[in-house]
Length: 358
Image (cartoon, rainbow, N blue to C red; front, side):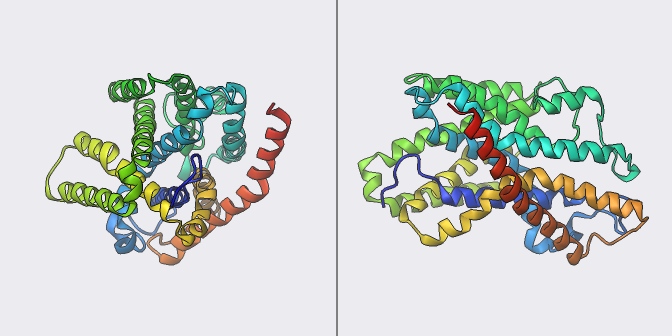
């Protein structure tokens, strides 16, 4: 029943993979372009809508889930190491750089080359030298940009890099960790109105960190240790109450987001962390999808551009309401991601870490 500190949270890995696929499904609407689609975009007519309506309608929240999950995991993996100076900023940065940057650069080059084709059906916004450089240095969402550019989903990676830097500074403190975390969460709520992406990133990442601090207190509590099942049931009850309230009452968009990001998602993360303490074998097996979650997220925009370019080149129009077309798109995203993770990302990551980590 006991879980060693800094162990991998396999159930959270699985949820991260599901979140990545949810974003892929949510962005399916991009295909409904007049020059290549026989169908107009109607949300509830998308393929398998009755089964996947949650992703079609609310897949956007998966990115916020990523940020919360990152905060939780980073507070778990690195906070103590940074505090005790067991890891330098250089090595911390290289660890993250080697994981995120190779695929980002590959997609930047690929989509940059696609942009040269000037496909009318899929024109890239802000396709210029300024935004190329911003993307190259992964600062394209730090407030210097004019809008989305190149591999648009990479905006969240850019913000996450900024959160890593802030996190490292916060993690160097001990007694101030909770006040600083709360301060950043509050500040982020105001930053959202000026720099939306940075505000959301800061809010969600440190809400994830706050969730971990709460989790670490709970798991060390003698009563919780003796009653893990009751703890899980209690958290599940809270999740059920939150969902019931959301479904029964009307909330403004801002209030609804606060409920989701401050209460519902953190509760789901907490429940998942405690469920793992039961050491259910299947959890580790299904977590493999989490390995390619980053690949799926970063590659799906490339796959969409590939589809559009081919259809535009041959002047073809197809029905994107077709289940077959949808499954083909999803399959390409997953296959490309598996190949990228195993034959590009892992080898390059290994080389970078071997050469640069001291």
